[in-house]
Image (cartoon, rainbow, N blue to C red; front, side, top):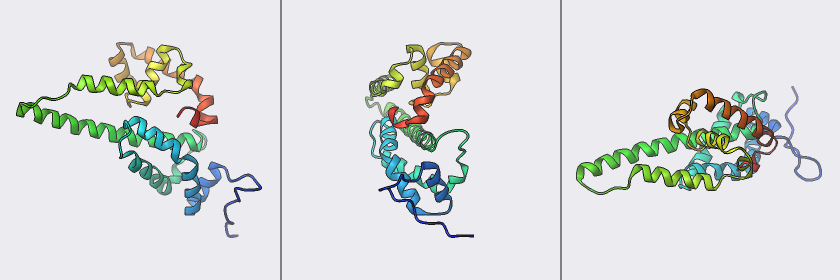
Length: 200
């Protein structure tokens, strides 16, 4: 079996595609992972910061994502998404997990303050501010959607809510939430697959 050659040069001829780099990661080639990092880290870090409201642990999320890629490149399914979309979904999942963990800690602290008789900020007020900040940074692709479709997509993507949770929060039938999500994703699919950075 012939040895795998070096990564194609980024000058003169086109460089390797994301899919080619991921196959080279499977061969345990760290330079391929480094190239993927250079291409996608800025956009992924921006997404993690958006979900975590600019928290320092966004950098940790980014490291976790590429460690996951190094150890789980074989799990990528080209039939389901592009490499860039796969990376975004991993980042989103890790960041939302961290956000949920943080909220649990905050609730514990708030309960302790209540027991001590100390004042504390209203959880509803904190949540409202957080949600407004997320909406202000949504880019043009989401702005093009009808308001009712944009609402369910934002709640799913940036707050990590399930469709049942969205239905409860918005006071909508579950079937309506599913339909709006499907219509919104169909409209965004082209942008997501062709250039995920347009969404970020």
